[in-house]
Image 1 (cartoon, rainbow, N blue to C red):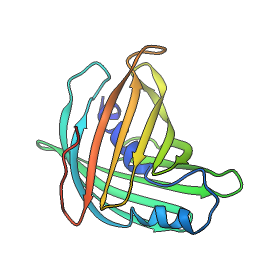
Image 2: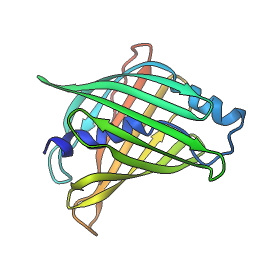
Image 3: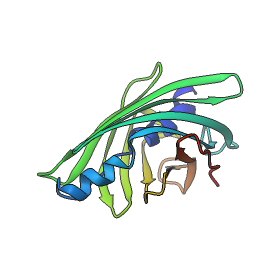
Image 4: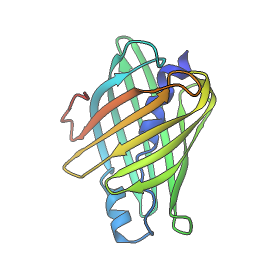
Length: 179
């Protein structure tokens, strides 16, 4: 259960890098949007069929022309979990790949592309979550000091998908609630 609660959030935080563009100035500019301190709130479903749990998060981003490292902590009531993610852009394939790590769990693989202001990433959990090992994460950063991420996962293998994580983080301590 520990993996089910924190894996979608960790994956989401870890996938805040850019994808399908050549490594040129606009790619570096997009990644630079994630630099610095962030805080925010949102909701997480421990399993696809459970009720959402509200969480507060604080994170810090460190970026390069082709990379993003994001680390932080999310809390609900008396629970707290450290998270980190590292992504790298490959200009030859125009794809991002990396890992996310949650405290006490094995790394999950992240792979995907950038589409405009969003990263669309396939998440490969190290163990089945909701009956399979795959999910989709979308991270959107249009600038303006905010980014959001959403994780969608199947209720059961081959079944309908639901939103299992939905967060909005703001720069400089301005907190925005996810829908």
